[in-house]
Image (cartoon, rainbow, N blue to C red; front, top):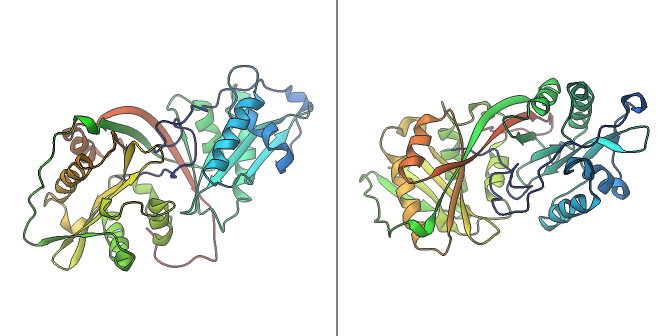
Length: 349
């Protein structure tokens, strides 16, 4: 399972790892008179940020500064930068459509936009998306991504027109940890040894991640787009809170499979950030054993919810997760577009 999500970057309907946050789902703002539109995108200054965000998080026909303020408070509470915001200004001085990209520690950014209400709104929004993307700070953003509901066809059309590519339909799954019986430790082949995270083992974790991406069925379009250091930082977020929840399965002396479990800030939820098996080690039951290990670990901890996001085309993973009692709770369509960075070199994932 690979989640293209950015830890702690937005509303629960647009990020997989924030299940209990307030719902800031964007609804369609009142469109300005198209005859009054101006065509020059502007980077929104701090003193006008709320004016732009109210169209991104608007509910109903009256975009609310209160909702925008709550969204901005949330952004700041997560220590995210809000400077990657662009808008077009209409003849009434309203900053709509608007876009904000929230950079994460792994040089990804989740993009939020004012959703188009009518088909004729799509070209204008697409022009804003493309302009903003070409001006993103590449020192902080290597990959931009957006999540939307599958029925948001106009929003999807705008991103496609702005050269974003469809990544996957993501299934969000969860189960209650309180329902777990105390799981027994899975039996491992004699060739396998388990290693928990320590900084000195980072090269082994990176190698396990890289090997697991070979011929992956989970969001394969992500492969090769990001530096492996950025990928690991993305999984880490602000740090590895519980090193025992990051497990590397070694087959003899080689990294074979990796399990990354991350507690969420609500204190009740653990996310399966990543589960992957190297191409040369598939078919040995390592993924199932690592899931069994996860069940054992979580039964010993005070969390109540276990969540994950998975590409709906990854049928083997879906079957595995269902066998451990996880059920689909939501579905999102993911789009991505890389941000060119000529100064970054090294191994990509």
